[in-house]
Amino acid sequence: MEIFKSVQFNFIGNRNKAFVFSGILILASVVSLFFHKGPNYAIDFLGGTVIQLQFEKAVNQDLGTIRSIITSLGYGTPEVKTVGRDDQNTIQIMVKRRGEGTMVGEQIRSALSVSYSHNPYTLLREELVGPKIGAELQASALIAIAVSLVAIIIYIAVRFNLPFGVAAVVALFHDTLITVGAFSILNYEISLPIIAALLTIIGYSLNDTIVVFDRIRENLSDSLSKKSFEDKCNQSINQTLSRTIITSGTTLAAVVILYGFFFRSADIIKDFSFAMLVGVAIGTYSSIFVATPVVILWNKKWPIR
Image 1 (cartoon, rainbow, N blue to C red):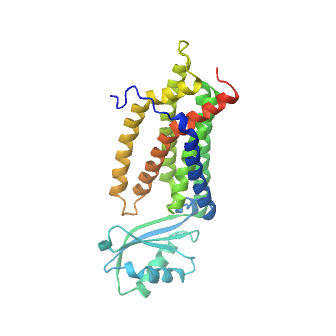
Image 2 (image 1 turned 60 degrees about the horizontal axis):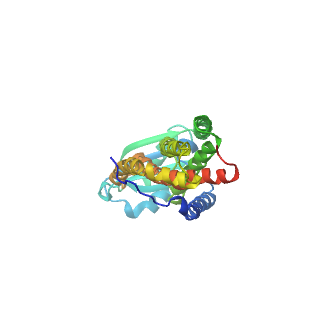
Image 3 (image 1 turned 90 degrees about the vertical axis):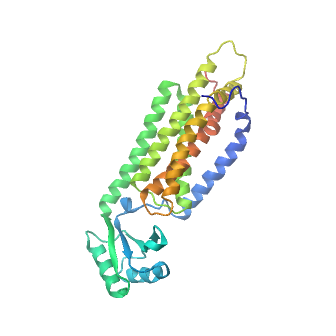
């Protein structure tokens, strides 16, 4: 099935505009990460306690009171927010970098039972991660991403040649940084499932990039064509455009529905689907406007044979 037949959109001719757009996104991501002193890691990486409580009465107007009660315990300033629908009266309490075992959760619940006794609650969820385990998980996640990128550049360098491998990894760094930047700007947490989403995005973006690169290689081997290198690259993008739109469109439709369904919840599926939504959109964009233009820039300096 082809949506576009015999089209000749000038993607490569607009690469400078795309570079400016990408530069703005990357700058916004870097500034946000600098302002927030890095990503907003979840307790998976920092260690801490997460508790979800469902109260009998409304709590929307009492979040400040609940926050003050927990702060008085000496665990720093906790994160207190409502989750789910307003009529569910459910809040999530997160305390980072403090305490071991179940002691923190027990003290929080005891303090609320005494100082907020007029509104009884039911414990829905409690999770805790020790600081040492969190640091190990953080290191393992970074190693997993680094190893995957190294493996990818080796694979593409062997499958195609070095310029294509470098261009693909540049696009993957571009996609990963912007996705993490989106989480930083919206103050979403980076947890283990989000690392899984980033690795999925890397694979998805790479697959789309390889399809374009494979068509470029085929067109470069056409000895009868008198077109320039840039024209052949632009032709390759247009020839694979239908495939790109269909594949990305169906994936985006799924993650948009998933994100919309869990938008008002605190479930990790919401953050996972948001990461996939940003990553798939940026990954599709980078295959056309980042990876291929990098190959063209390389060819101008060192012609690709």
